[in-house]
Amino acid sequence: MVTPTIQRRRLGNALKRAREAAGKTQEEAAEVIDSASSKVSRLELGQSGIRLTDLKLLLDFYGVTGEEAEPLRDLARAGRQRGRWSGYRNVVPDWFRQYLDLEADAAEIRWYQSEVIPGILQIEPYIRTIIDGDDVERQTAVRLERQKVIDRPDGPELNFILSESALRRTLGEPEAMREQLVHIAALANRPNVTIQVFSLDAETYVTSSYNFIILRFGEEVASDVIYLETFTDADYLDSPEALRAYNRLWDRLRAAALGPAESRKLILRIADEMK
Image (tube, rainbow, N blue to C red; front, top):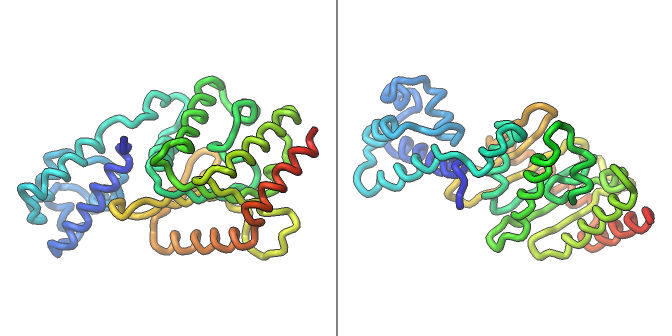
């Protein structure tokens, strides 16, 4: 089921195309619904839902009527529904729930991680070691629920570049860390999963200290998204300039990292060292 976050992005993309086809500006559209142009911008970026009354005003202004308008009304209704993660509000902040929706709907995920194992690859003992909070059970449940995307027949193509330091940093008991590495090596055999290791002795000037995730979607969504997480918040970048910059960085990191087969051998070798 497509999440409300993606439905809003699809609607925003459609509204932007309709406005541009009608030769209207965001400022003119804002006057029609008696709001600031920033609201129209948020609508077109899929960052907020829209009331059906405001949608009708905009569609009439853009000359979108009849059968052309009905799919957009459906998207507006779907975009105002509660997301699948709304039941975890007390353990998942708003800024991260948006990411979870995007992760579930992405066609491809490119994930670079320098210090810890990515959440979607973590086994339960590792999760419990690194969780910082009171409700450990529910936070663990969220992370394990996310991992179902790996097994979905229609799930995304998953590409990871992991720093060797993330693999060697023992969190919790050594045996649990060894189990974590063996789990990653097993996932690397999946047809939809590619894992590369950025080794400690890699001879490159590539900037590798910034963790980032690139979420790629189909053409019906406005654009791909760069996700950058901080300790208390996150940034979602979708400008053409940011997308070009981070995709170039990804390509350079991928070229500097070990190949998938070499990476899997290294992961298993590190696991054996923990016996």
